[in-house]
Image 1: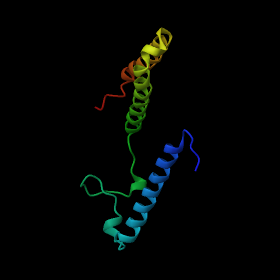
Image 2: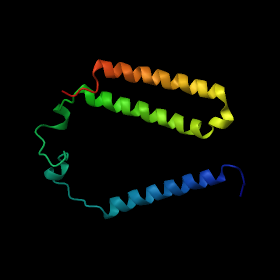
Image 3: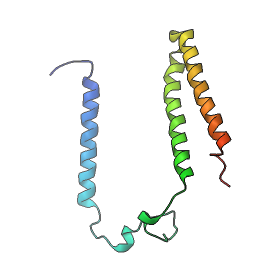
Image 4: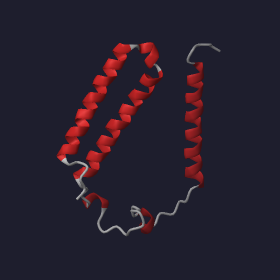
Length: 120
């Protein structure tokens, strides 16, 4: 067997893939097989659907909020490692992160002024 720095990661990937394959196989073998029209209807928070899913129109604000959520979620992904290593990175990294946060802040101000968060 080879011993490298990535053996643990490869082993974790193999065990995870095997776990997913086993669970998918078990669900297909042990799961229910009878499909009825009532089971094929999409579930909408307990409400009876009025049209088919293909004909429903959603307001564009749902998508805007989703994109904004992803944007600020990615911001947190960048902020956490930066905060952990801030002492080692120094003032240049601090200035770069302030620039990054100011661009995001300007974007937040812009979408706020455009009324994306107004749901009236």
